[in-house]
Length: 454
Image 1: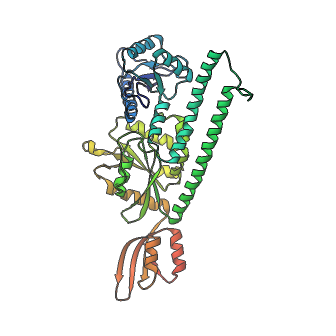
Image 2: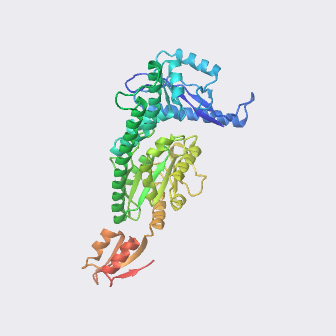
């Protein structure tokens, strides 16, 4: 099966120029296109071009990184020392040598071995980056909170270990073998590995403290009984734009770039019934997102499992929107999200303003334009319906004495929808949305109050 990879030329921080080449990686099981293109081959070529476009978008996300060129070339197994055939390697090397401003090459494959990286850098005379290194650098540039920075530092550990092997190999060649550090009884490799283990343990401990703090905040939110809605989707699908449209929060500034959001952020909003809810903005997903990065951010993503509802936002204009959907669902299943949460998920097809007369083909999917507000009222109604089911909240009418504290209590502990005042007897009929626990407390405090179920 063809699995595209890209050789992208990009500048590391501080360099002003960069270049990008693209490769299509063929795995051990190859699909060779015959002279007359079949339908399958045509689809493979389209997929390769789309994944090249995504790789270019990754590079364009970084300041001072510029794509100068791209090329699709078959590769061998990425675990092998030589990932190119002799002829393709020659073609690629000649292409690189003809580009005088090239400062780095980006191979759009998840990971290349440290040995392969060294061989290619020696042959081409420039830095070589794989997808792991580029995505990690994007994360590093976009991290804002302490937790995000710690998670990135944790994801860097495998890269540091790989670089250490290269350094030790070079030292051994220069000095004729491993040497012990004076008086320590440890080789240089052993010392550096110990330092990395200690660093990893320290980061994990710090993340565990933050996780406990987040659990405490989650408990406090639960006590106040705010329904929590996690907004998820492929990177750059419009999640933040949608949350801004749903909440009216002026401080939210969506950015048209990959991985603009790395931290989970919570934003208060209201549903049509005036019920207060919390929308949670999450990190975006990416096809072939390196495993270590997913693992490092699992502490952040675990928040999703405690949601009352998931809203899956899709960029329906993207040519690979179906593949992107599959990527998101795959990651969610790997996070051990409860099946009831996956089954109740609301699917949103965003950016329909860019398509003419679009109608979803998937059952129960909602077409919206977060940017222009199209379809948002229908979305809010669907969210409210799902939230009432998920939380077990009830809609009922309560008869209260206006001279007593019942009305103010209901405003504080429930969602008041309507108040019909009966001035002749000093009472009011109040329509509320209320949780089972709040209803129980109300009955205990005001046992004589009349309650009418719909």
